[in-house]
Image (cartoon, rainbow, N blue to C red; front, side):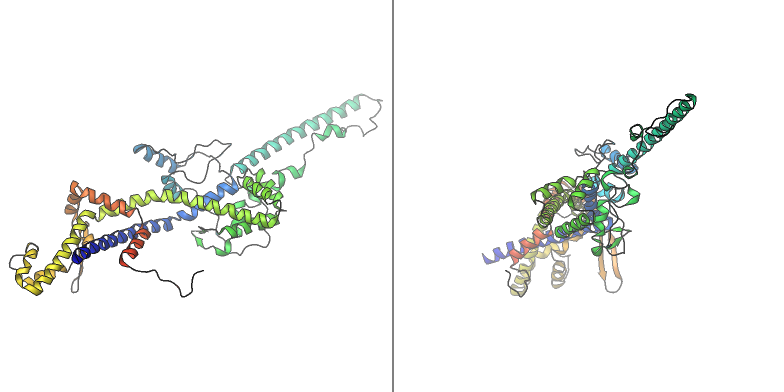
Length: 462
């Protein structure tokens, strides 16, 4: 009975170790891809750009978007569009809306991250301006062009009116002059509508064009530069503590003339950030400390929601990587479990061989070559334990020789035959499902089964 329990314990530990090792491999490949492409930081700053600066301009579909749309049409149609349908007035989101967008459009499209700067945070920040690629900047440029055109037309009309008045005064000789002003000048009421306020030229409410200041996201990045390092000329910040975000917003508001002035200008920029800021400010009853805590709590909740969205996208990538790893190593869990039990039977046979003699070697005969020495047979059979046999079914194998060095061998035919054999498909499916639980899950199971304890510090937790 004890021997039977030992067999099943060895089987469980062997399977858990195999799933843990393959899960670590999947997680490592995924983390390498994410770090290489900077997906995590780009995902964060795409959200911050959307929230702080507003939507970007819908300036047509890029070549990358057209390629991805063609790939989607080649396969099955996705329910979620790659790029959000956008009108010129509303713009589109920088945050991708599909897995293809996260791992194709986000890494290789327009980079939403601010440029890296080696300078420390400035003492005085530049004024708030519309983001260069935002709908607000496009509308400001259109309004400024229309205002300049209107002012030019009104000036021309005013000059024509003044000329006509002068001509009439010269023709009407002896006519009494207007006592309010000399001849040839219009009344103030007449020119009031023609006067253009220079302060109103540009954005209203203290908001400047893109080339005269920095956007809200860029002002936020200025306050976080001390924890930044460069990655291809862009920021690599992928995590912002909520407390630091709240302090940065307070600093920006202080330099901008107060919280209410900042909210007014954000509203002029059509920034989605103005609405939660107003709600927090009203709930705090205009108390700055309560407002800081409210902004911190709001951002903490937003980061939690963003993390859930990111994990939902990454989960599908892990599924694809798990499938690739399972097929590359052709890991059949059912067959591996049988190998573990057979390995224990071999070891029991070796123990019996040492106690009862050569007749106990019969269970190993099928694994030995004809005429092979029994002791050499035992050594050969048990020199490759079941755990190592996980990697023996890959299309390429390598053996280490002390004299000749590594020797590579190609087993593509056997590997393909194994993949196309329906008898292995249930084992492949079980392996794929097991890998979806992740390495932390299997490590926790291994600790519980084997009795390992996590390393703890000397201090007593409170």
